[in-house]
Each structure stands twice: as C-alpha cells, then as structure tokens.
Length: 405
View 1 (cartoon, rainbow, N blue to C red):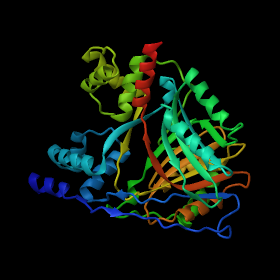
View 2: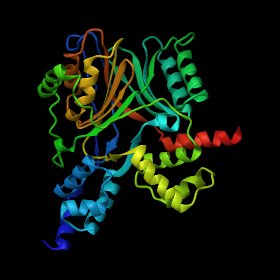
View 3: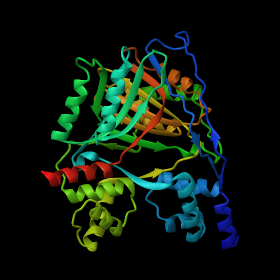
View 4: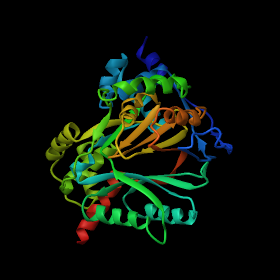
C-alpha cells in the first residue's frame, strides 16, 4: 500500500457523528428493587454530546497509547507500520474531535500537596448543601464537583475533589469542612486525603462505535471470583500518595506543566515561568529537569473524550476497617471502560465513565451483592459542574500568594 493510501486510510478512521440531544427520563425507584444499605443518585442530563466513531487506524493508535502513553509519533509510526506524517495528521484529528492529549498523574506529596476527596449529604435542608457547594466553588483548591439532582433517599448529595497545599492551607480547608458539620448547618460531611490514586482506560472493550461492556452477571462473577485472591492481586496504574514535603517553586511550576502536558518542551516551560511571573532557568537546565521529572515524578496518562462514555457514575464506600472489597475494586478496575479510583484510610471512591445504554443500577447491584453489611455504599449518576481546575491553576495561586507575604 502506498504512503498516500495508508495516510487516507488512517484519516478516514475518524468520522464525526451529528450532535444528538441525550435526555434522561426520570426513573422512579422503590425500595423493593434496592438493598436497604444502597443509596442511588440520579442526575438528569440534557446536554448535547459530540460522538465520534473510530476506525481501525485510530483504535490501534489509541490502543498503543493506552498501554504506553509516553510513545512519540515516530515510535507510533514504526509500531503501526506507517509514516510519521500519517500518524501526525491522525493525531491532530483526534485532538480536534476527541480532545486527545497526554497529561500526567503523580504523587502530589512530592510537591507539598494533598489530594482530598469527600462527599456530603443533607436530608433536612437542601439550602445548607447549596451553601456548602458554593463554598467549594469559591475556594481555589477545589478541582471537581459532582452534584446529584434526584435521589431514592429523598436527599441531596455531592462528591468533590481538591488539591490543597500542606500546612496552613490544609488546616484552614479542613477547619471549614468541619464547621459545616456543626450548628447551624449540621451537614453530613465525609472527607479524607487519598493514599492511592488510580486511572484506567480499557479500550479493548471498544470496537470504534460500541462498547462491549457487560455490567451484569459477568461483572459480579469477576468481582466475586477475585475475593479469595484480594491480598495478592496487583493494582495496575496506581500512584501512591506520600507525606507532603515542602517543594521549591521551580518544581511546582514544572510539575504542574507536565500534569497538563506530559510532552511539554523547554519553550513551554519558559512560557509557564513567565505566566507565573518568575525568572526561568536556562534552556539546558529546563530540558534536564523536565526529563528528570518525567522519569521520577510524573507518570504519563492518556486523555480522550467523545468515545461514547456519556454517563458518569460515582460510587463511594465507607467502613471502619479497610476490607478486601477495596482491594478488589482497585485491582479489578480493568473490568470497566474508564475508571478513576481514590483510596483512603477507610474509604474508596470510583468515578466510572460508561456508555449511556449501560444499566447503572445493575452495576450498583452487582457491587452491593458482594459487600459486607457494615459497609456504607452510595452510587449516583452525576454530571460535572463547570468548575474544573488543574494543578497548574493551584500552583499559580500559591505562587501569587507567596509574593504578597
């Protein structure tokens, strides 16, 4: 096959579908269908979502990136048996229609930051939860908020994530969280710092237009069958979070850049220092330190959107002692199309992105059928709020504040 024919085949592997409105009808759930310990949230979504089908060329490229996101276009071209030019054009098309990028995941303790996650509910006065949500949105450290709209328990709930610098900022953040538990709010708030963060994307379940995901019997059987081996199952794609240490500003600037763009160059680093209002080291020093941080601090991570995972499910589990179920859910995250996991001292949270046609209630039931009775489990369909911060935004805030002190 000629180079031109190969290039055309790759470029034709991404086709843009028309915009289609997705309207989720309200579902009425009775206690007859749900275990008593299981709380379900429903989030109605009427947004328009762009859907793209992926051909064999795009799937092969993304499949290799899912296994090794650090691969460069020249390496991908050799692996795919095509030209670098063809891979580059396909890459640009995926960037345009699927927001393809290679970011990073890291141990935030290395730069003096704690990853905090938690949830809150209010059964008596929804206004209290609204005030709590407004505070989360106003603080510069909140990265993501997931809100519920309708719950089977007739209450309102949210799940949140935050990146908070250790020390004074963290103490103030925790102090405000605890203040909402007391009068006059009396809000039920649970929060912990993550001991482990995991991210997994299983493109092996995707044929380019449809996900082969069975949320029912196969999922429950896989989780149940893995229980006896919980102690020895490996946890893939997990990053352990260490005790925060005081970072220098230069590390904070460069690591925050790599979290957003793992392939950032020294020129990108210069722009980052200028944006932060700091003097930058020499080009040679920047190249060396970017290489060192990629090797020792930041792990590459594939980001891809508009591939049919239009529904987001949040699952939280809380209990007094860490159980084998926590280890199973972390180790068996490969069973899901796309999942992020956060593990704390006595809790775990899973953020699942699944196809719209998948039955979220079946997933909830499959997990609830194998959990112990002391475990508090909560599942809800959610939509991210407009707030979406990155380490880069928080680093900028920290540096600006440091200049005023």
